[in-house]
Length: 126
Length: 106
Image 1 (cartoon, rainbow over the protein chains, first blue to last red):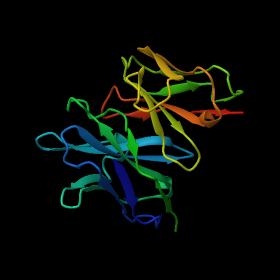
Image 2 (cartoon, rainbow over the protein chains, first blue to last red):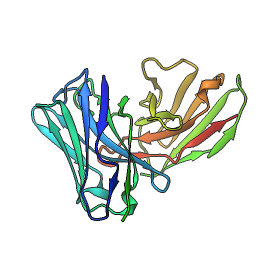
Image 3 (cartoon, rainbow over the protein chains, first blue to last red):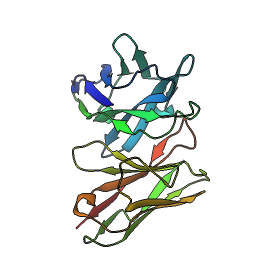
């Protein structure tokens, strides 16, 4: 399994951050996987942002800190998932990672990510 | 749920036994993972469920603990083990958090 991230690395305040994570070797609609976004910055450390997963229907879980601004969507036609974060500020400057968790029973989507993307440095600056 | 790690950094030599601890602000059962991260790369999963070794990870890595106190031990430090190590809790599936990290260098 490999995850390949893409998206712009420079944004201005108030813009929307949009990143995509393309999946190879697995399926975004797998019943035994969950797909997350995590970011890392010197000020915040590693911060889990949210996840999407399919268990007969789609679920989306988001961290409280970004819940009002975040959307994570699967795209089954392209076998990928995306992150959108609206109204960004310089505090959103970070390296963003996508990750896959293997959930063998289908009942524990919060298991830690075993496969990670390469990371995307996103800078928010006017 | 806050996680604290000790020490924040340590210096060690190859062949040494190294232990890093992670303390949670509340009981999190066994739901702790350990990651290794080298500069410019993504974190790598070493251990989950406090003590289960991720496939492909060398057996010199081990994890222990439950409740609020956890530990990662490297039985014999190798040159490729110099990195930063993070614990993560996933007890609350909506409130996944990471520790601040422990840097291991020579």
